[in-house]
Image (cartoon, rainbow, N blue to C red; front, side, top):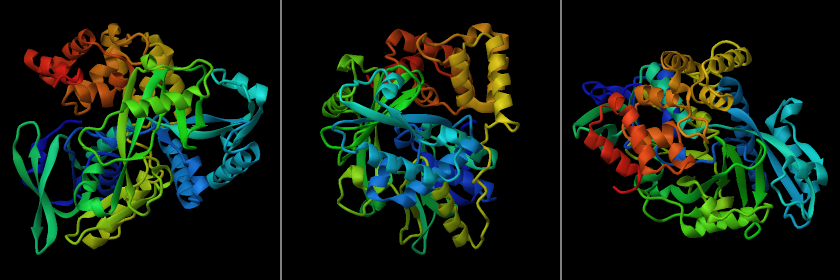
Length: 521
């Protein structure tokens, strides 16, 4: 994956996609697979905003059953199953525990009914994906971090997990392999119009400052919060969610819990050897360019989590945090947590298609609808090819056999088992290239930070091959070290120095990149 701004120049495209989050990435990949000439531009880094600030889940949305949003749940569950099969390296199973206490808002019978309906909507599931019931003692033993006082029983159910930023990156890689021109750090500066209809856009290279016109027969705006702040304001509603990164709890399963203060659902989710706590959900009207976790939001999450834990977390336990803005359809004045997460497309008078709302899980199907509309406008009806198609980095042979062989090879090269597991999830079949690098230098098999399952060979491969522009791209989205660890200046400088040659950074540029990661610029 190499960034090439000049590839945008001197061409006319069938489709220009603006926005490099999950919806833009799926749209560009889908359209390129259908044979359209496609360009996609992103003003920052791929997945640089909301699409790297999710709960990292591929799920049906159990809580949406309370609002009778059965259509959305069924749609998301269908996509979940498809992704588990098409991208087992990228999307993997994760079970959730749901405790039922004496004062729980939803009792055992109601929870049993809801989970049975969830299983039913998911279709034909084997026993590993069906919900299970545990009595009080069994559930307390299964989740030893929970306070068992007044616990009555509990359930577990199945969903799935991903690394959201890498999901987007893999789709961008697939789009490029299918002929799309994909350029990050390329800002949309205006539309080209003829006869009142959009016929492309003007863009500016955020690195060199050059400008270019991109003629395109169709334009899709998938810029999320930026669409909501512009033309799409009348269609969009922004809500904010934050997550905290905390030390791991025992076990490898997640928890779905209910806030005592307001009845909202929140999660505790294992991720890269840490625990994600989130999310909040509140309307947002602030600066869309600077979204962060506020003290009140942090206090809310810690207080609600501590209701359930034997050992309370304090602010000093927080390792990292991140915040994102959800774009919802402006369909009602319902509280943010009750507003629909379903997706919609609006077409402005000038012909630009706006992607509004949606979820990480169901973005593929929604993007297919976008490309259907684009093809209709272009006078063709080419069928969607993304459903069930193996992901670009997925092993082509049987996954189980490939995984066993790859884990064995990683062990022979000195990669510890946990780091090997995450390496294969992050890179899929491309891990073979990383193994070759380790063969040349066995020190690359060592962890960057002892407590985290991320190795030096991974860092170097990302810097060389994944369109990294800034140190923050590398340490937040290619590998999320900036939120998984408290990286001090000395460590940041060592990491930056190790990739400076690959990225062409001078000493002055290394200094600036480190300062940006430290929040001093």
